[in-house]
Image 1: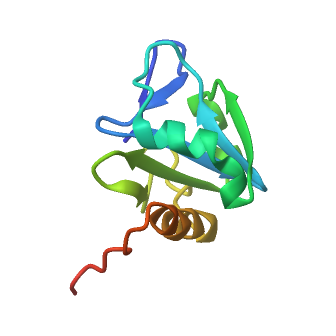
Image 2 (image 1 turned 60 degrees about the vertical axis):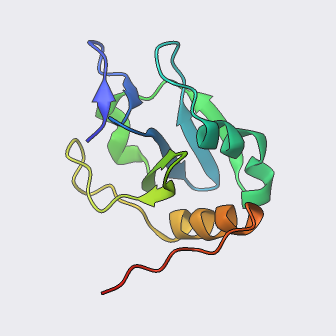
Length: 117
C-alpha cells in the first residue's frame, strides 16, 4: 500500500519511502510532506553506483501503470521488493530492484539476508 494526498500524488508507504523504475530511470516521488529517509537519500546520492539516472518528481496514482517496477526503502530493512501494489496490481518489483538490493548491500559492506523457507 502506498499513501497519497488529496490530489492523488504519491507520498510514501506507511513505514517506507517508495521508488519506481522505468527504463534506466530511478524515479523518487518529490514532496514537501514526506520523510526524507536515510536510504532514500543514499540512493539519490549514489544513483550512478546502480547504473541509473535519478528523476525526482511528482508521481500521480493514475500514472503508476507507466512504471516497470516499484520497491520500498527504509533504514531497518534497506531495499524491499514489492510483490503487488494495491493501487496498481500489475506493478511489482523485478530484476532492476533485485540488482539495486544486491548492490546496496555490497556498497554497505553487508551480506544480503537469506530467508529460510
